[in-house]
Image (cartoon, rainbow, N blue to C red):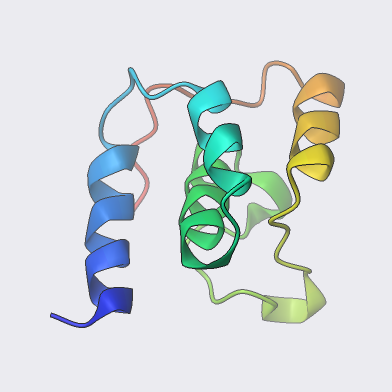
Length: 89
């Protein structure tokens, strides 16, 4: 299995577990690279930010955000946006 396919599978698995907290995903952003991209995708799915969901990064000119400070600001501005029971596909 390719790395990208494995991360996609892992993202889907994480997204099906409501006990994964936003703070844990924010911490993964600190690692950068594919790990940060994985965490950002989970955050997009959980918050429905910009309605990006599973669309490719950069779809429709939407910037794919992997910076922790940006996500922290977003979650602070929209505290009810994080869904712990998300099941998007």
